[in-house]
Length: 390
Image 1 (cartoon, one colour):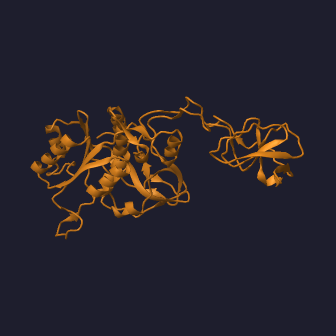
Image 2: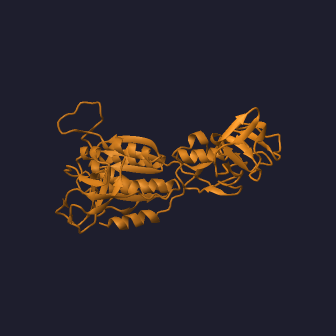
Image 3: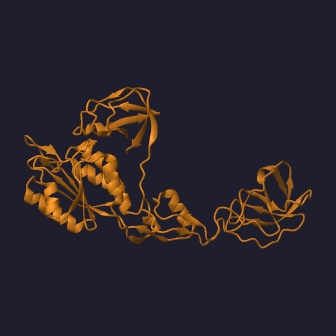
């Protein structure tokens, strides 16, 4: 059994080889950028007015200014501004030659083709060419997650398509003769198959693809067939159940028989101790316990970061500070623990939690707190790090 920190180090050392593909900008949301975005234009591309008003030269102290042109956004000026002249200009309009200031409309009066300044405006109200981005600037580094705001920046660069990292294809296998697919009646001793669906949802939420999802009986033949099939078809295989020390826990031995090198088989963590991780060539394999909270937590702590690594992104979980509303206490302290909690308005509320099979606790949780190995108690009022979960 290895420590959580050691398991994370092992996962970081295993290489991943992200591949590149080109997609339309309309399909790039939530993908991982596979190239640096280097600007081919200045932003703004010209001196433009920051508001509706009148453009003139700041040194001109005339009592009134003749309006020689009206410039709206997209219109190219045809006049060069002389002394005693101005142009009426709209927000986003090109500031004409000879002008270096825009005075806002609210402090002016316009009469019979002339503008007079009747109030104070100390600002020049011009967005200058290249003040945001210059030609050759790297505006975005590869490896970032493309959000709506990144889409906007990329579009402003005039790019219709871009390079992104390919999404790994994941195969999910749920083992258990007691499992029944939702929608079917339960017989005595049976339970509904939740792990296959929750793991698939976590995979999709991470921006990767579910290539296959299969539920198999607790027989060595069936489990071997499913794993072999998924290894041939998928970049990563996640197996739920069959990884512990029971009579029907065949997964670790089957993986070894299929040429998978196991890097660890147990982690000092609650929940999720009998977690398996292995590789076969470029195939990645995780075996997680069948209890639903275990599979959820192990995915969040270990599998999700590796999926992002396979897409060229260095994933670092966000944490926020929270104050314990009540004392946390536990008896067993030989393993690190991850506890589902409710975070609200800066406070951490403990939930009714009966252990790794208590999936309903997850539906009430919006975060996890970690309890280090050897720690028995966290007093009320203590500040802890909360790892948000969606």
